Length: 148
Image (cartoon, rainbow, N blue to C red):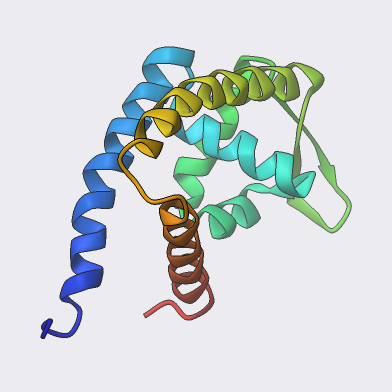
Protein backbone atom coordinates (compact mmCIF):
# COMPACT_ATOMS: atom_id res chain seq x y z
CA UNK A 1 0.00 0.00 0.00
CA UNK A 2 1.27 3.46 -0.88
CA UNK A 3 1.42 6.27 1.63
CA UNK A 4 -1.09 9.00 0.61
CA UNK A 5 0.56 11.44 -1.75
CA UNK A 6 3.65 9.34 -2.36
CA UNK A 7 2.79 8.45 -5.96
CA UNK A 8 2.14 12.07 -6.94
CA UNK A 9 5.29 13.13 -5.08
CA UNK A 10 7.19 10.60 -7.21
CA UNK A 11 5.63 12.13 -10.35
CA UNK A 12 6.90 15.58 -9.36
CA UNK A 13 10.29 14.12 -8.42
CA UNK A 14 10.60 12.88 -11.99
CA UNK A 15 9.02 15.91 -13.66
CA UNK A 16 11.24 18.51 -11.96
CA UNK A 17 14.59 17.38 -13.37
CA UNK A 18 12.96 16.41 -16.67
CA UNK A 19 11.44 19.90 -17.00
CA UNK A 20 14.72 21.62 -16.10
CA UNK A 21 16.63 19.53 -18.65
CA UNK A 22 14.00 20.34 -21.28
CA UNK A 23 14.19 24.05 -20.48
CA UNK A 24 17.97 24.03 -20.85
CA UNK A 25 17.67 22.20 -24.17
CA UNK A 26 15.19 24.78 -25.50
CA UNK A 27 17.43 27.65 -24.44
CA UNK A 28 20.59 26.05 -25.82
CA UNK A 29 19.15 24.77 -29.10
CA UNK A 30 17.02 27.72 -30.11
CA UNK A 31 18.69 30.51 -28.19
CA UNK A 32 15.26 31.35 -26.81
CA UNK A 33 14.93 31.94 -23.06
CA UNK A 34 12.28 29.77 -21.46
CA UNK A 35 10.24 32.79 -20.32
CA UNK A 36 10.12 34.14 -23.85
CA UNK A 37 9.05 30.73 -25.13
CA UNK A 38 6.28 30.57 -22.54
CA UNK A 39 5.01 34.01 -23.57
CA UNK A 40 5.10 33.13 -27.28
CA UNK A 41 3.25 29.86 -26.64
CA UNK A 42 0.61 31.62 -24.56
CA UNK A 43 0.09 34.34 -27.17
CA UNK A 44 -0.15 31.73 -29.92
CA UNK A 45 -2.99 30.19 -27.95
CA UNK A 46 -4.90 33.32 -26.97
CA UNK A 47 -4.07 35.96 -29.58
CA UNK A 48 -3.49 39.09 -27.53
CA UNK A 49 -3.23 39.51 -23.78
CA UNK A 50 -2.03 41.88 -21.12
CA UNK A 51 1.08 41.10 -19.09
CA UNK A 52 -0.98 40.44 -15.93
CA UNK A 53 -3.25 38.07 -17.86
CA UNK A 54 -0.22 36.24 -19.27
CA UNK A 55 1.17 35.97 -15.74
CA UNK A 56 -2.06 34.38 -14.51
CA UNK A 57 -2.20 32.02 -17.50
CA UNK A 58 1.42 30.95 -17.06
CA UNK A 59 1.35 30.98 -13.24
CA UNK A 60 4.37 33.29 -13.32
CA UNK A 61 4.97 36.66 -11.71
CA UNK A 62 3.97 39.75 -13.62
CA UNK A 63 7.54 41.02 -13.33
CA UNK A 64 9.01 37.86 -14.89
CA UNK A 65 6.45 37.97 -17.70
CA UNK A 66 7.18 41.66 -18.30
CA UNK A 67 10.91 40.96 -18.64
CA UNK A 68 10.12 38.12 -21.05
CA UNK A 69 7.78 40.35 -23.08
CA UNK A 70 10.46 43.05 -23.19
CA UNK A 71 13.04 40.48 -24.35
CA UNK A 72 10.68 39.14 -27.03
CA UNK A 73 9.90 42.71 -28.11
CA UNK A 74 13.60 43.52 -28.51
CA UNK A 75 13.89 40.49 -30.76
CA UNK A 76 10.89 41.62 -32.83
CA UNK A 77 8.76 38.63 -31.80
CA UNK A 78 5.97 40.54 -30.04
CA UNK A 79 4.47 43.99 -30.30
CA UNK A 80 2.47 46.00 -27.83
CA UNK A 81 -0.40 48.36 -28.41
CA UNK A 82 -2.67 50.49 -26.31
CA UNK A 83 -5.35 48.70 -24.39
CA UNK A 84 -8.71 50.47 -24.68
CA UNK A 85 -9.84 48.80 -21.45
CA UNK A 86 -6.87 49.93 -19.36
CA UNK A 87 -4.50 52.87 -19.87
CA UNK A 88 -1.45 51.37 -18.21
CA UNK A 89 -1.74 47.71 -19.17
CA UNK A 90 -0.86 47.34 -22.84
CA UNK A 91 -1.95 44.47 -25.06
CA UNK A 92 0.78 42.10 -26.27
CA UNK A 93 0.56 40.15 -29.53
CA UNK A 94 2.82 37.97 -31.64
CA UNK A 95 4.41 39.52 -34.71
CA UNK A 96 4.79 37.53 -37.93
CA UNK A 97 8.47 37.06 -36.97
CA UNK A 98 7.36 35.73 -33.57
CA UNK A 99 4.92 33.32 -35.19
CA UNK A 100 7.70 32.09 -37.50
CA UNK A 101 10.35 31.64 -34.81
CA UNK A 102 7.85 29.77 -32.63
CA UNK A 103 6.89 27.52 -35.55
CA UNK A 104 10.57 26.85 -36.25
CA UNK A 105 11.28 25.97 -32.60
CA UNK A 106 8.22 23.72 -32.42
CA UNK A 107 9.21 21.96 -35.66
CA UNK A 108 12.73 21.31 -34.36
CA UNK A 109 11.32 20.02 -31.07
CA UNK A 110 8.91 17.69 -32.86
CA UNK A 111 11.76 16.23 -34.90
CA UNK A 112 13.84 15.60 -31.79
CA UNK A 113 10.89 14.32 -29.81
CA UNK A 114 9.89 12.09 -32.72
CA UNK A 115 13.25 10.38 -32.48
CA UNK A 116 12.89 10.00 -28.72
CA UNK A 117 9.33 8.73 -29.06
CA UNK A 118 10.40 6.11 -31.60
CA UNK A 119 13.08 4.94 -29.16
CA UNK A 120 10.63 4.86 -26.25
CA UNK A 121 8.11 2.90 -28.31
CA UNK A 122 10.52 -0.03 -28.25
CA UNK A 123 10.42 0.01 -24.41
CA UNK A 124 6.81 0.95 -23.66
CA UNK A 125 3.37 -0.47 -24.22
CA UNK A 126 1.46 1.29 -27.02
CA UNK A 127 -0.89 3.17 -24.66
CA UNK A 128 1.68 4.30 -22.09
CA UNK A 129 2.30 7.76 -23.54
CA UNK A 130 -1.44 8.31 -23.97
CA UNK A 131 -2.03 7.33 -20.34
CA UNK A 132 0.80 9.61 -19.22
CA UNK A 133 -0.74 12.51 -21.10
CA UNK A 134 -4.19 11.85 -19.60
CA UNK A 135 -2.75 11.84 -16.08
CA UNK A 136 -0.70 15.01 -16.61
CA UNK A 137 -3.67 16.84 -18.15
CA UNK A 138 -5.92 15.83 -15.24
CA UNK A 139 -3.27 16.92 -12.76
CA UNK A 140 -2.77 20.22 -14.57
CA UNK A 141 -6.50 20.89 -14.68
CA UNK A 142 -6.86 20.09 -10.98
CA UNK A 143 -3.96 22.32 -9.98
CA UNK A 144 -5.02 25.21 -12.21
CA UNK A 145 -8.73 25.06 -11.35
CA UNK A 146 -8.25 24.39 -7.62
CA UNK A 147 -4.89 25.75 -6.48
CA UNK A 148 -4.12 24.91 -2.88
